[in-house]
Length: 219
Image 1 (cartoon, helix red, strand yellow):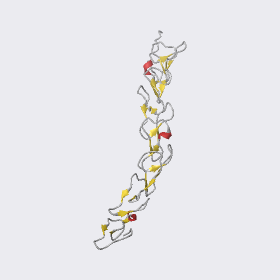
Image 2 (image 1 turned 30 degrees about the vertical axis):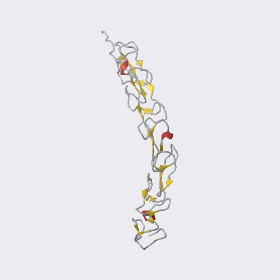
Image 3 (image 1 turned 90 degrees about the horizontal axis):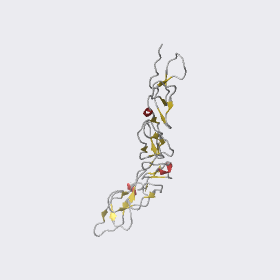
């Protein structure tokens, strides 16, 4: 009987009455009557039965035009899907330190990074936290603060301020006419200045009346 040419995307490598076979994934055949299939260009792949070079799509982690050799995403960039779409920069708070990546790594706790970061050391402590670049950072203790991102240390709240929570970026002012020591934690640490009085610590104080005086700090 007459024989028919193998369809596009199929091949038959031997003589005889056997059937044509589908090209495997990662191959294609763009001619009828093929005796073999062609491999996709570097770092690309295709589905079974592919019948055109342009069926070869860039693998995840690689970018380029359909049917061409694909290049690995650079550090700080990733690509999570097959195809001709470009690599994307890592989002803020993530990084990627290898080429050909498919997902960016999250920065350690209490740190963040700029977009397209390519090293864990790009992850720096957030305001209100202290530690080394690229490592998990610890919240500032009560009575201390840190107002900028980076590896600097937390600082004691100044006299006249306090902070009763951890992880602070700014200290709170004492009530009017009160004073506190460095590193104060509680509002009750704010006591009346000399010449001022109140019934208790941690509240605004009033000036001593005419004919009266108060020589020491306190309530």
